[in-house]
Image (cartoon, rainbow, N blue to C red):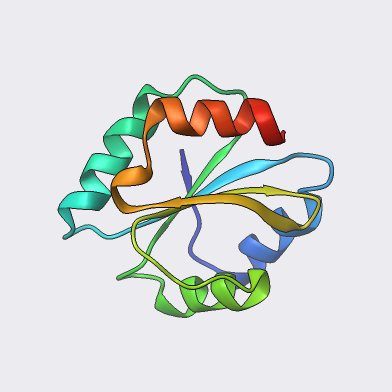
Amino acid sequence: MRRIKKIDEWRALLEKSDEQPFLLVKLSVTCVASITAKKELLKLQTDLPIVVVIVQFSKTLSETIATDLGVKHETPQLLILKDKKGIWQATHYHIKEATVKDAIEKYV
């Protein structure tokens, strides 16, 4: 997992997502659902990069991501990004290792 903090990091990743799809996860350090989601992602076996945004420390970045993708901001939230757009998402307790693995196989 790689944490990003800046809008230019986000935009560079988004721009390259047509060549390299990735997982983006927005987490809260004080939310039980976020802790559970992170544990599920640590079990995930994938070649896709996993990019993390900690919303308390990067509120502007989190809002920019929601605006750029046209999605409602949620925490925790996991998105699969490909071809410069979010192609799949899960939130809260729907972020499960098996569910994410299935979505990667289906959409990437």
